[in-house]
Length: 338
Ligand SMILES: *[C@@H]1O[C@H](CO)[C@@H](O)[C@H](O)[C@H]1NC(C)=O
Ligand SMILES: *[C@@H]1O[C@H](CO)[C@@H](O)[C@H](O)[C@H]1NC(C)=O
Image (cartoon, rainbow, N blue to C red; front, side, top):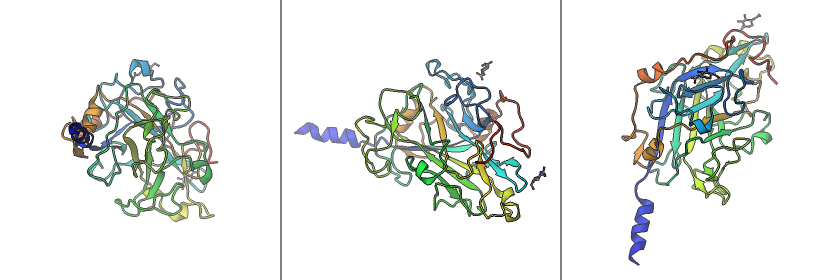
């Protein structure tokens, strides 16, 4: 049968990309248009990167963040917004100090450190990236993690929300689900990997997670199949955020009981409540086009902006005015470590 060959060829044609780029910081403040839209301020502080139309409310039907005039991301057509909570250091006297961020290797000049974003078709180490995936649609958004998780068991339903203790700046081993319990010379990296199977219908869901699923068996990395309820394989979105803990690495300042001193901006001192937010905002079909182009990190079809240009978009005027940087007696929003 003649056609078999051409179908196979079509299925295995090189349509493969691993996209990796840096975004500098857009703003750090208490807004969360996904989980608490319209609330000014939102319950806890976030660090946000991406398109500058980020706001307390972002209606999917208005195709926000498509209304942005610039983006802090290296890929000039990516007006998406990506955000996470931020880390604080808790001193022995009980006060809190914000932990700054630092840019990934080669991206050290990104304003505010920002984050590195990936869209993968196959595992990071697979340079062939052969699997076909569907790009997200305008209005798409998702969340991963549980703000209330404080134990290994509660965090277990999420795969791959991790910490890497950067003994060296290039350390990429021994990921943990709790905060590292020792001094990390060069900082702590959080890696957030989102689920990769979409229900094909809903751009969002009440918990911002139900429209997405992990593979039914195996993992994204092992090429595990998507469940019938969520049949559409998407790219794996991953954030890497590096927390610059270097100024807090003096053991004398750490708790006397030997525990680690870092807490999320909503009070989690365990690390199990690691979570992230994503609001899709790529221009037209630019994401699908790049995904369908054969490339590994260095994607020729992508319009890139220089670090200088992306930094220019950084520094959005915060909607919420409050001290998030001083030595604080409680975390912004009234949280304490618990
Ligand atoms: C954010 O929303 C406020 C009103 O809620 C509006 O005045 C402001 O222009 C918006 N900012 C952006 C960047 O869209
Ligand atoms: C608490 O400890 C920090 C770190 O040692 C110090 O900078 C800060 O001034 C102290 N605050 C108070 C109120 O003692």
